[in-house]
Length: 377
Ligand SMILES: *Cc1c(COP(=O)(O)O)cnc(C)c1O
Image 1 (cartoon, rainbow, N blue to C red):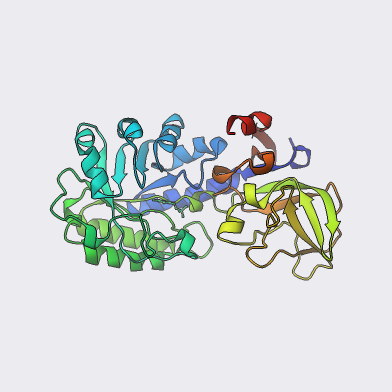
Image 2: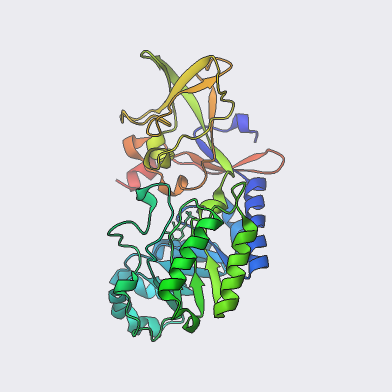
């Protein structure tokens, strides 16, 4: 099918771009010796999973459900970390996962017997108290953070059965930021690193973004694993799905209350949630810096603030040509942290999932409707 022929709204992943991200990530793995895991939290797009599971070393999961998904999609290594595991989930988590990371000594003690009787390699998440992140909402080491054990709370004498340490302190960050975090991690936990089999550097590495210093990342990993004799893991999510597709929507109506607003069949709140939470302004294909025709774009929901880019303070998009009802609008870079966070608020239809091959043919993978709403409510 051609892009013009698909029904909107739809997320369209561009296979060539996904492959190019995966090539960069597997280059990092090969050159540095690290194992690279896909963080399913940010990117769990089913039609892309055969490629991802083939080209990366495994998946990192936030709990039982993502771990089951990783297993179903044939990932070679399954790593599971949760801020807290429940008694109901832990047995299956331990049986599915190759690595399980606990967030506190209380969780580790609670499940230690089960963990020691499983085949899983066990780690603890630490909080190095040094981080880099564009916003507090995405800062895992902010004040009172519940994520990871700080040095003050760390029981250095209770490490029997612990194979690894995990930290996650970055969000959309550079290799230079990793270097700073790594230094703090070494200063605080260096004494026990040589006793570990593996160290997981978490996610938030913006490796596939233009300008990322891949050589520095490779050197940091190589030096670290040589110095301590450990296997290093990294687990990017955003970098896997970065700029590898878009959300296509149709203009249903245009209202004019001192400013023209296109009402579209997609929603910032339901389908582009980080535009509100981060917040940021997504690019629209074809927009101009000083176009004569200016519009805002709002979802067909009752939420007043469901306006694309409004939270970032830049809701006006301008174009060389006027927009008409029925036109299609493409929001760029909407494959990561979107599908995994979708809601059916207001009963709005979930966008279809589609894959576009290298010659521009689009295959619809899944469409949604009433049942998806009814089943969750
Ligand atoms: C969110 C998260 C990741 C992935 O982060 P990205 O910013 O998508 O690379 C990896 N590990 C943990 C523990 C996370 O919470």
